[in-house]
Length: 60
Image (cartoon, rainbow, N blue to C red; front, side, top):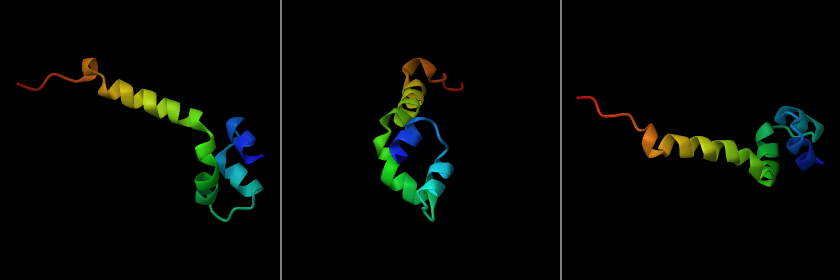
């Protein structure tokens, strides 16, 4: 149920409350690994930052 709620976009805090976790970190530790799509935006941003064409010219 938690994985499905997270995948559907239900806020992490809401899922944590529904599961009666005392801390959001508990929910994160148990369930976010099940949502690999969450990593895609981070990976794409990092790829953009590391792309050679995005590196500024050194100051002269």
